[in-house]
Image (cartoon, rainbow, N blue to C red; front, side, top):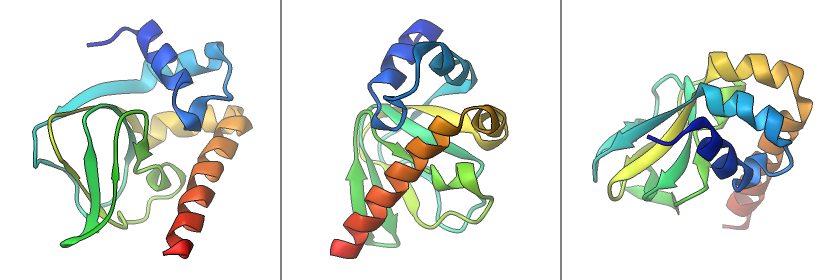
Length: 138
């Protein structure tokens, strides 16, 4: 288990949060739970209702629809962030490629912080826009 201070330092290195001051990241660190998955374990499945986003501390995940691989993500990358913004079903499945340690942030907890700190919403919008542009290139 990593401490709140270690979580803040880690979050500062994540592109989604790099523009957020440390004292505000402390609020996020406090609601971020460390969670582990075994190799080949599903983090979540396409169609499930999304209630949290995840940030990879260690390991790697595969984002996929059925057998079609959409992408693979590793350390300091986030997934499930669309569920922070809405309560729609998951658009893809996520499976751990090897042992995975991630920070899990629940939508309800995050919504309170998001309402107060618009720059965090801007960070999420940047990530989603980047992913949309990448998808359009394919």
